[in-house]
Image (cartoon, rainbow, N blue to C red; front, side, top):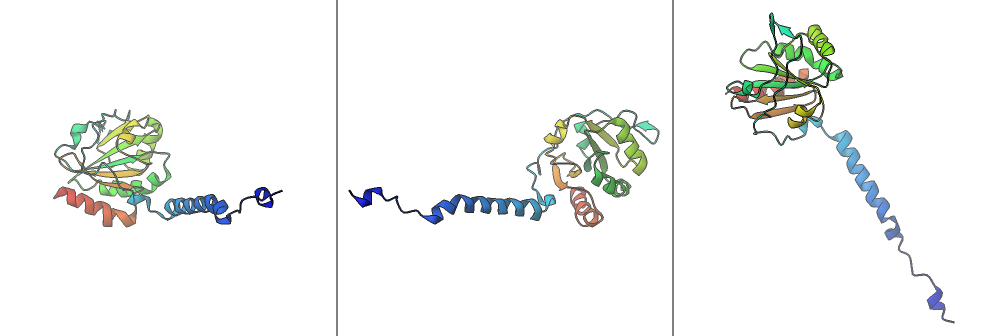
Length: 193
């Protein structure tokens, strides 16, 4: 009998470990991207493009200076620099950024527009009553479709829209004391020029 025919082929230990090595490499890359990346650096494909042409209804019962606050009509972007903030009363970082937006709203060279994301009208009005309403326009995005058109990853997000109605800048995450002056106001100033 031939002994060579009954012996198993030689194994290559590295070939057996290759799937495990690939898996560990991909897992490490995923973890680095997940925990080591800055979400505010996520690029937006909408920069330089017209703001979405989505009409949103007004927040029922919201009044500012004795007049009802209108909903979002895309014509509101023409001829004015706009800061568009996507927010919700249930969003914890939105509570932190609200006083900064209220302070930002004192500058009358631009308008601040709110998109209320998947929120109840009572909670949204209570939120604005607590922190102040910096918004001259508040559109209600009850089903989240408009936020998808804006390319929103999650609330809060803030956009700067230039006078020509094109998105000039996107801030992913909350407005903070660190980024309001160094980033957001700088982007607004660029749009005002």
